[in-house]
Length: 196
Image (cartoon, rainbow, N blue to C red):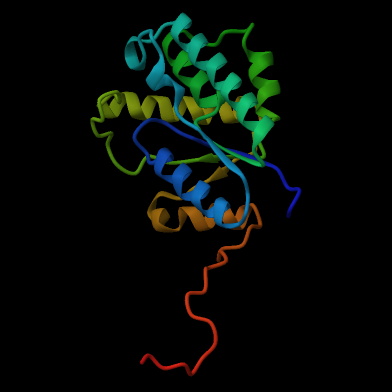
């Protein structure tokens, strides 16, 4: 496992818990002695309109920034955890303007660079966080678009089960055949010594 390299992206519509899962998995991998970087959701930094007001230019910025961040992280770390992938970033563009033929070969190629895509299902309505769109209809439409693109690009992904939310991290670790338990620091060595 020492030489194993991973790039894992959590995909899905907004407001489903991808970021929390990213942090949970990154922490677990660090305890397994992986060097880890976390590629945050780049849409939050986009200087152009996002959500239902997005444009081709905005989604192009997001898509290319995502790829650039992943390249930089993969060059320096054994494990890269991505809050989104090129696929679900593309879904927002497809929802707004339809499929863009010139982008699809790039997306298809880039999808081969992930060790694993993990599809996170909707389990609650989106909550306002300063950026996220609150429309449940929009949330569901993006989720369906992502599912359609997974099929269209013939992408293998681990689909998490919404009723099993508390076991999501376990499902990911088992799929990756990684240890569920991590080494713990032993605070007390030996036995039988008594406090004074």
